[in-house]
Image 1 (spheres, rainbow, N blue to C red):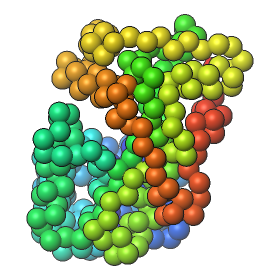
Image 2 (image 1 turned 120 degrees about the horizontal axis):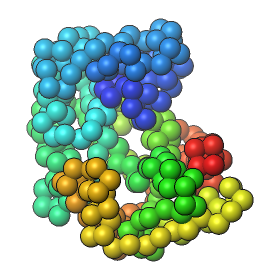
Image 3 (image 1 turned 30 degrees about the horizontal axis):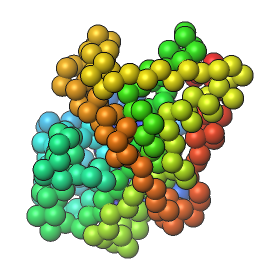
Length: 283
């Protein structure tokens, strides 16, 4: 049986849907059962309530589990708790969403956190597979209110390119690997879209789809950090986001992979397809 954590999130909910549709025995770990869609509740999968900060609930969720698809807000202590519970309860394999540039000496705190979790996972002796997505196309949805109100958006990524990927394709890769985990033991997969995209490209594609110009307003990472704080983000989160955007401007996300197609047999969704699928959010 496969346990999916973070099963009501963007990637987790789609992975659960795909696994259930393919009739793989699946258990969805959720913190709030009221957030489970009715379609998922009626799909035949098991739904269990648990909390990353309560090991007893994790142990209960892990019973009779062979493979864990570990999707979370990437808090190292919480992910380590899931891994330790899997080891205690006899699970055999963890599929973890991580970062392509995770390292113990990274200047980015969240990447150091991923590296810490990866090191712990490898120390347990469990089988593992790592999935490293590029930037999620779904992050563009945060621009929707600004685009509706001002026909533009603000970003501090300069002319940096990114292999932006649809979360639905990340979920498809994760589900395919979880279903045949032993075939992917010890592997790291890079999960990207089909093309390198700049935010200038995003503005143009949105403008073409909406029928009016969409302005990409460039600001510095520090200006962006201050704007995010004014918008209500915690200072540490705003600083981390601004740091990442600055790195994107320097080419940090300009990488592509063919792993979506090789794992799923389907090409990853393009920026144009993503916008067409979500156009009402921006209109």
